[in-house]
Length: 150
Image (cartoon, rainbow, N blue to C red; front, side):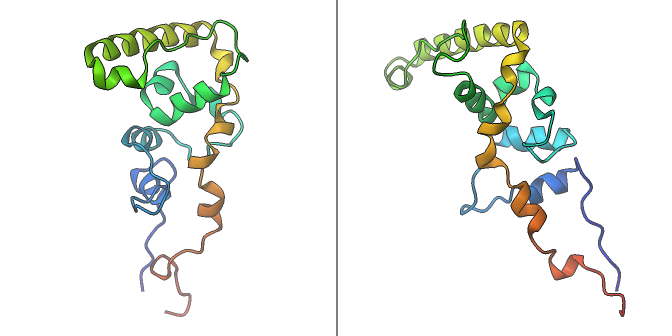
């Protein structure tokens, strides 16, 4: 009986097995899946995770943007741009909403580049998406294990 190798860190197969696409699991965006496939990490709580993030990553991956906003909200960070659009604008004035959203993202990108230290602590807000402990503790399926006696 031949053994099938486990997916290698940073591989697409590992990222897909890390975040199953089942409806009963915590859903993740395609952008986060893509980011995971391109980076050699799966644990959001590892030391230095915030150093892996670039301003473009924070702006392009919805989970990272939400975590960044939560980490720096509530007056914790001085000078943080605030969105001027509302959810009501999205349905009532879609053109205005898109323009204000793009203006906000541009000002946030400028802020991120000038203050990269504001990305520290983002990993704490990503705990809902971090399945590393469960994934590491789960037993391997029988098809992935090798029998020494086969």
